[in-house]
Image (cartoon, rainbow, N blue to C red):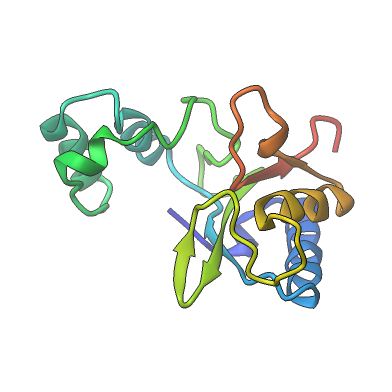
Length: 156
């Protein structure tokens, strides 16, 4: 899995860079956690919470990911699809999505109520609005919200 913005389509890379600058200007520490991934990496992530721990860790090991614990594998799935816009099928292809994390005290924070910049707006909602202002589609608006996920709009 990549965290490099250069692994995104040129249009998405430009929007992602603008998004990161705006977040920094608002004192929202955001970190890119994923840009491009292979189909095998997507399958390993998709298996989490759906398959046995041994199967999940077999898939994860095959793509160089660390082994999960039983507790980690009981958490809700980290992805809902095998057709993610993160997937690149060839070396020349670029990803059409990226994921982020909010950072507090040098740790990723997934709490929906976190407010690192103390402005009375929950940070996940705030970064969603900021991403949308950059022309991104935010996964937080979906029927099954995926707040860390941003992608190119369908007609971009």
